[in-house]
Length: 143
Image (cartoon, rainbow, N blue to C red; front, side, top):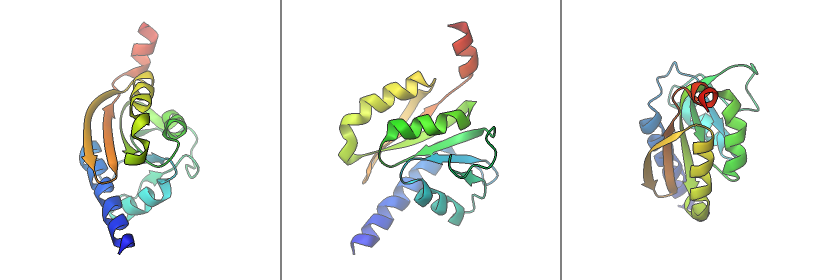
């Protein structure tokens, strides 16, 4: 029964991330974090064929407009995903209930990366933050 609950919670997180980031099945999605393989498999089962992780990305210079981050050590996972994201990208990050104290640290890190937090959605697993980055290179050059 616990597996069914976990699967249900995991699927709820994937549903929320998809609803927030709105990828098409043709969009490339970069996934980072300790739960990246589970997210990757869930997206592929749903018809998203252009899904990669920093470890499986064959093209080092490939850029993605959508990032999904989940699992432990979120700050490191954000650092892994960041080089693969475009200047006009969106990202969804799952902050698990057990890591609630990291919420402000993750928010600050997203802002340092040029993302503006647009929404936060609570789910059984925790909080999914949604953030957008518009023209990050132009903002850095102006500063």
